[in-house]
Image (cartoon, rainbow, N blue to C red; front, side):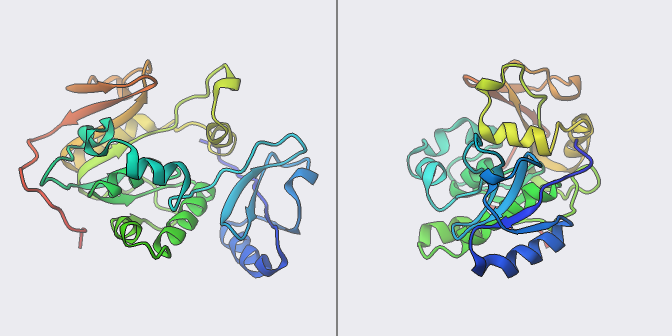
Amino acid sequence: MVDQLNCPIIYTDAVLAEHAAHLAQRLGQPCLGHKNASDLETPPYVLQCTEMGLQLQQTGARAHGPVWVDFNGGGADHRRQYGGGRGQMIAKAVGLKAGVCPLVFDATAGLGGDAFVLASLGARVLLQERNPIVHALLADGLDRLGADRRAELLAVAARMRLLPQGADSTQRMPAADVVYLDPMFPARQKQAAVKKEMTAFHTLVGEDDDQDALLSLALAQARYRVVVKRPRKAPCLAGREPALTLEGKSSRFDIYPLKKMPDGLKSEWLA
């Protein structure tokens, strides 16, 4: 895990100046003002406030495109509509099926892609993300999702809750029907094959060097099962073999069942 973050705030339109200043103060980062990321040489990344939303942008003339959370359209909404529903591996892994909608605690939420899929399929998902930069991106995406007027997206937004910034799964993990873990894995050597999101994450976040401790905590807090998402060929978390594995082309889901999930389970939010 990267201890020191250096990710200044910029804005692309003067009307966003106040918002950028408040964000910089909250994150403890400098605000560089009205700038173009391509004109900056350092640091490697900045957070840019745009009219579309908050974006993590690489600096320099050869920078890749921005990383941001967009649940309202693009790939996320396409997957919601055409991704395969409850036939998807992640849905099977957490136990989603007809009449069963568990409360899932996503302890390593990242940009929220998996949580959005689960919420769109009926699960209530409590999200936790300890990195303040990633948390800010996720919070911004959830705010825009909640402001969408389409009823189907408002319903998904109502099933997603993000814990406040500063929450750390290694320190606090609420009880839930299912605890879902997707810890950061060390960067691959062939960087050309790594998505821009993962390149950014490895720069700003690093790897979760305390990820083995997460499994023990998750097993103590989950009511019915723990699900761990791993690269397909990665070792099991904490060297602990799962009872069941669902394997795809590039990743797999290791499942640690604790007791049978009852039929008709439709959990509400924790009090």
